Length: 267
Image (cartoon, rainbow, N blue to C red; front, side):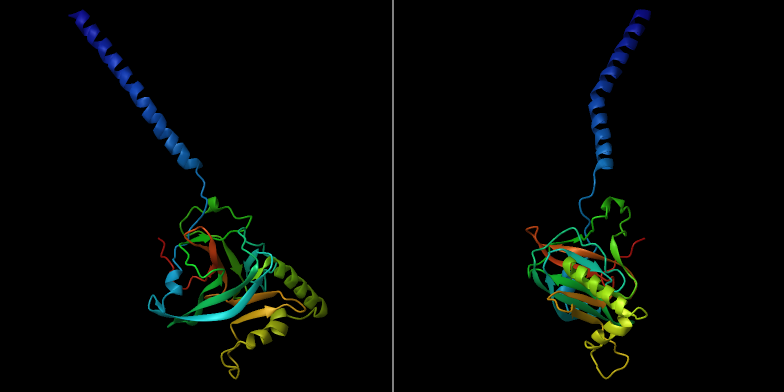
């Protein structure tokens, strides 16, 4: 009887040991999967919104949309800067580049009931093809793996209530324009003493003293280069931009989202 008991214990041990060996590869596979998830890095971040809803409809979220076209942007270098030009003209360009050329800028104005006209989205249009996805636009220093919350994004700071597109080469010329103005007007203010009159040219009602104008497409002196400035949604803050990518993986547009429409509610 004792021999049978010992024999049973041995069989049980061998059975358990065999079972462990069978599960080890599965455990290894599971552990590898967990490790892989930890080391996987993001390659892109998509927008929360499909901006085609704004481009293709006259009303979004019970808010009427009006299209404002402010002319073309000259893009000689293919490197685009997105910033508040009055306070951050030395902003670095975005990492993706486009084919040099001249491209139209379209602003989609939300006719809100509570806050009047608000610039919802500004689009620099490289093609009339439809974007299938919207990929966050980044600068060289941006690491998307630092964005751990679904509400996080890299944007550009706005401190003068303005956003704008311009080519990197135009930005260099614009910085020289700023520097020359400051040298000639050490006590002056670039907006009050110069750009205010440029904005006023685009006021809807030139006779209305409270209509200061909301945008400019400014050609730099003695140059074919230009920069743009336009009101930024609800004013100062930080705003993201996104590349519109078509079904073939080609860049068709660059948009600034001023977070007026299609804004998600995060918990």
